Image 1 (cartoon, one colour):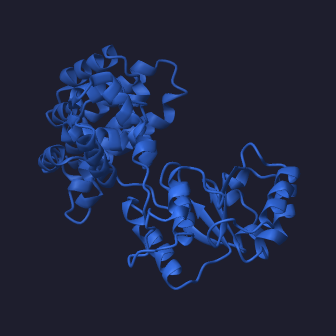
Image 2 (cartoon, rainbow, N blue to C red):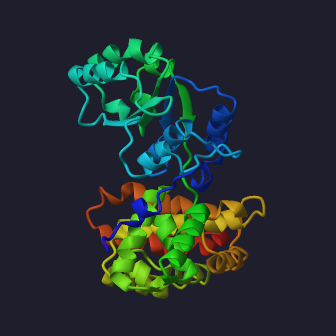
Length: 370
């Protein structure tokens, strides 16, 4: 049987299966229900959050012959079946990154005049629309403003600021959200169950964090981990494969800083370097750890912590050992270290001096009070 990557295999086919974009899917469904379809839409947001997927679902639904009471495509009519089999003539996708000239747009404009063979609408999805040249944008303006009644344009972009205001003014704009760690982790758990993969909760959380808000990236990383570890995946296997520093190192370091144990802190840093991590990676992770501890100091900001349940408890416990003044000063030191790391001649010494300074925060504070 042919192998299909998870990002394609589990690509949503209905509005209800799109994760993390409920406000957008609800608006689109209401537009279909009330027959208030615009002639041009602009979908913008980070990579891998569902822009093209939502465009395809929207195109399928408005051409469906038996739309459900929930305003979803039936997946049974001829139009839906042709869409699901990737042979629909109602949906036209153009990659503006490689088709960005005036001639490409003129070909598109000629095609727009032809009414659909099946269904009511021809939908033109233009990916990475910001890559169109200025001349191509200008050639596209009139058609975008007054297309034939059967034509709907959906423009997708990751860089909204590069699009001409004249184009923006002709479109309904939808800003897609980054996928939260919690949402990505929950969906990865669903995929793992479908694929009969046993994976630890914290491992899912690391994959979701590494994806940085992109569901497509999360699924690609998941496939990579499955290829590396098989059907039984542990937290340690994930951090090893993704070259992520174990949370445990940062918890031990904070304990050493609070005890003013310089030797232990330096030994932990040496161990991290032996595992192949560079100083910049380490200090960035330490800054994130301190930030997360600060979020745990206030019940109102605990929700901003994007980690799994078991690790979250450790953060809450360690946060109680640190006062706000300690965390502010520690963050100031690590941030300065990050800023100056690139220009430091002896990079290891630069980080080690920061570690020594972190281990002396409490002593230096006592000196100021005396």
